[in-house]
Length: 334
Ligand code: AMP
Ligand code: MG
Image (cartoon, rainbow, N blue to C red):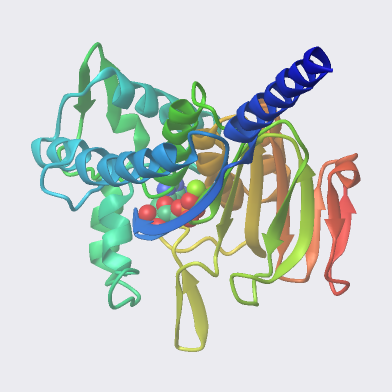
């Protein structure tokens, strides 16, 4: 009897230990929200290292913004580069620049991260208004990705008045940095959204909504069922104003300096890479469906285009992953 009881006790202890290990790795769920990169960041983690990782995610996102990507933060790398008309940058920033230059070139300049001076004239963050046409033309003449090149550790700006702006890719870059932190930690699942860009990590199928362009941020027109990836949406509803009866928004046509006016209201891109999902959602918005979907394909990504006449345009076969949830929209695959 004594022996039996001892065996039972050992088994019970083993089961408890196994449960604790399982619970330690898989069980702990936390959710945290904070404000960084001019937007809301929401962190949802499951796994033993959740607490520690949530703290690290906040630190890295804030520091990436303040020390590297922000145009306005006095000590940031991008601020220094813009002030000095180029300069030395570390390997990470070289990596970001070379990916973005690739998107600029392959999108034939529809994506252009040197439009900072043009964006500033629209004043979207403060008092938006249609800029003076001469000032706009002048700012545009100093922009252009062709003016930026990398030579070893140096970023060269052929025009010292070009202004680098990572507004179209910074949130995706944050997702990549967050993914790198989580990859060797005990985290079973992660859903981290930085504004309109979301990181999904974990061995399961996730559901992500495509936002209703005319509803609030919690209302959706379709859902995507996808495995772990990064998903970014560029929407004209994010920053816009009305003047003389016309709506103006923050996604600009680099050829004219004016907001893109091609019938799209949003583009959502799914990619393994955060920086690509973010940059391509902006690039595809500027390019429109035909060229945009070609570009997304070239980068191995999937794109969903929402039009102002309530269609969702996607490549053939997209119905495997997208389901319309608002019946006033139609899925058009081509
Ligand atoms: P997103 O919301 O990711 O599409 O990024 C929009 C932001 O990117 C704007 O607020 C500008 O700072 C910047 N931007 C606007 N137009 C372009 C463009 N054609 N290429 C690259 N960046 C742009
Ligand atoms: Mg973007």
